[in-house]
Image (cartoon, rainbow, N blue to C red; front, top):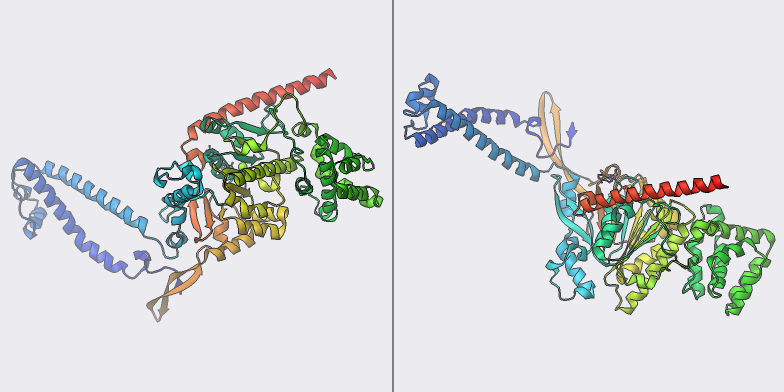
Length: 602
Ligand SMILES: Nc1ncnc2c1ncn2[C@@H]1O[C@H](COP(=O)(O)OP(=O)(O)O)[C@@H](O)[C@H]1O
Ligand SMILES: [Mg+2]
């Protein structure tokens, strides 16, 4: 029979149990007798009495009940009371010491202990990350790293989890790291990642969300903390707040490359994979031509929607020619004059990709609204403002969110180039539900250089496969490879990812105690078995609130995440959520009442 009991198996399961019982049986009466004697000595000292010396005579006197001989001149009640106090004090000391020892004792094969022992996370600890921050941010030059506020050091990833369940050092990602996190729904993406990162970011922030929760929780708290402006993009009335600004996707769009990039955001949201493969590239070229024609002739996104509905109209071709884009003009001419089936396939795919332009409410956010200010990406990159981009999952507005995020990130890159290579303070871009609402086509490629520009992307996905559906296998592999901090939280059901992670986490030796029964006699041996520290099933079953952190250059660490409701701003955020919820409820009521009134007037 072989059992993984290990050398520190419970004493009851080992043959040492009998020996321990005899030892305890011998020493327990002596210990009790000594405690009584010590209590008597204490009582005698208080009452100036006499106590027999500790020894056999003392025990015999106790057996005969000769208390007056044992502690002459001292009350027995006082002795018993002091005995009770002494026993309680000894018990308390033993308990505390045992707790301390038990916390350090780990079971053989304990994965948490193995991870703590092996993980070298000094590079992610506050002091090391603070030194990196001083080196990376010009505004911090000369500051002692130890004096930096936490928010200036980097983004908090979580605390090292110890075998006792306690937590150790807090781990950070620095201002040149790029983060990707995988967590199932309701396992803390918003509470442990989006909200804390947005709140702690020292500079401009872009944050996406498919619910009102992020905006409700921190819009006012962050604005009060940084003094920055809140830009809320909510064309689908998730928060029912009025539109306060608009964005011109065509502003500064002057090259074929810019137009192609913008068109790519639209085409990437086509869900029909077959259609996307067949017509996608041509639809992207078509949109590219139309976007360029509109941008170079001071037209708006509204015109693009019209041109998409009229495949034969020559206006965009003429506009491209006037602007000097002759090759684009002839490419568009070729598309318009091609075989009808081909032309319709291309136009139909482009219309699907740009379906947001047929929604008046969405279009209002990207076409001139004369009384409202226009969003300026360059000014935003230099600010402490926050851009909250809200959209329901897989909605028509998604390509515009990707395009706006991309535009703001490129503005930040331009600013970084003009200020010594890095943006300071850094920009934090938290792409929650990225696969559903913010599909930036070349995000995997951006990951390889954003960190070096002082732009810290945090892409949060529900699973690895979700990323594969957006960026394809090679794209997702590139994103995984380029992310310097990978966080794997609860509820990861992908057999492939969990198996790969088990391999990456590595193996350790577990002591195995073998017990052999032979002719009524038992013999035991201890051997070592090499096994995975965490098996795929263990990774799949990680409890909510914990995560594996794979940081470049270190072994994987198990961490306890830090949800906002256990953080320093919990009271402010709770109050903000209450206010925001009331505001959303009132605005929603007004909105529906107005709609009902309009319908009844009709
Ligand atoms: N203020 C709070 N106090 C305690 N638990 C909360 C609080 N807010 C959210 N939670 C819980 O935290 C968990 C994770 O929520 P959330 O981060 O929104 O999930 P998701 O991963 O879908 O973004 C949920 O089970 C939610 O009920
Ligand atoms: Mg969420």
